[in-house]
Image 1 (spheres, rainbow, N blue to C red):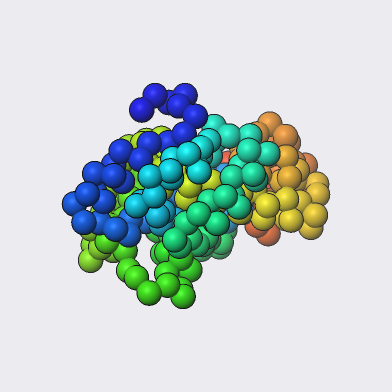
Image 2 (image 1 turned 90 degrees about the vertical axis):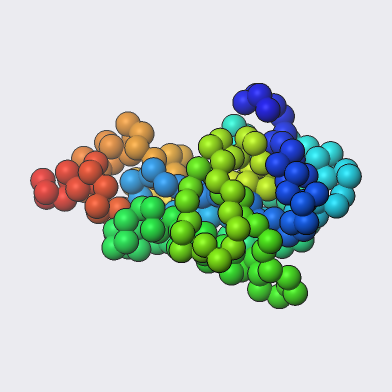
Length: 219
């Protein structure tokens, strides 16, 4: 599917559904690269038996390709359509303690646990975006490069994770307005770097990340 397609593909979901995988959970993260704040993950199981699913979720694709307004509009549609969904996170402290990849997996596990709470089914398969998850090897998995383009389930998870994390960073901005989190969401922009130079790392900065560690050593 072309990268500029307005909606992520359901081809892989349809193929696995035809093989008997009824409950496919797409998982994706948001916030792997920022210098501050948590990493978030979404988990989404879509009703693949619906022939009109692609139409209902028209416009859902890689969250980074969507405007904030479009993401906000699509969140409620995803939540209302999904058989199950959840969002989990791992804090900046957990990222520093575990490393970013284990923290991503922790956030994904929390998202999956929330999605499964209160439903009477278990995953037949996990669709992952360019990630191997051997800790969950008891569940069949499919890892796709460019998964948030190639899989609507992964794309939907990416939208939920991105919106949750952006909202969280806006809340942090109210507590720490000098860092500009509402604007850059913790990513390494020039404004963020200038704030680090002026104020040093905040309590929510990821101290093991090199751009932050630099200012720790200077202080």
